[in-house]
Length: 52
Image (cartoon, one colour):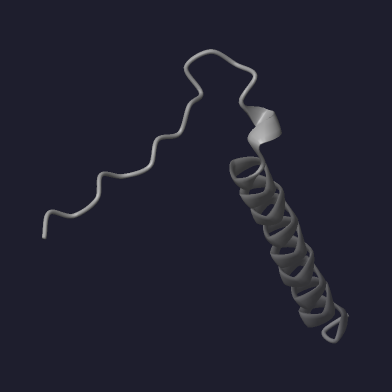
């Protein structure tokens, strides 16, 4: 049983890490794709150019 607990904790850590990676990838893909702009008010504007 003492060997099982660290294995379960490692497995949970890997599972949460993979889940976060997948959600982050999905978020970045939706941010970069123009297909997600079908909703009103969902426009992303470019930041203004710095004054030189």
